Length: 144
Image 1: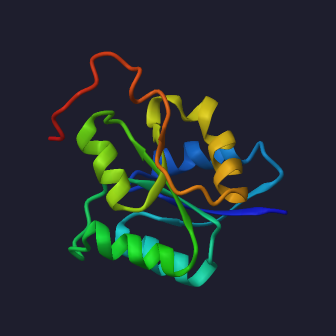
Image 2: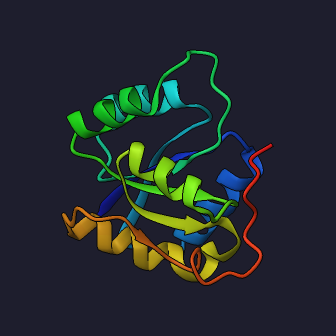
């Protein structure tokens, strides 16, 4: 089975890096990219990915709420893998509000991304799993 993935990050460099990491796994196919929440919903509707890798801190002029995004992604049965440079309680809560099943630290994607996508692509677990976020000392609490 090929796991279809949508990349949603407002930074082209980050999307390229993620695409590069995922490109080493033959069972994963990046089917689309989005640079904001509205595009994430549109691309999910169009490509029906199994997993959406969602940057939690994208600017979006469409004023979508986390609930709007979560409901839209859930409508197409996409599992959400949240990514962020922030690793605090607020970010974990935000990830859950977007319907994320996993939250990964952007600084550790090289090691953790493929296993997380593989798990989400074949699993329907409902609780949020956080990797490295809780163990990293000095996690920042401000989201400027």
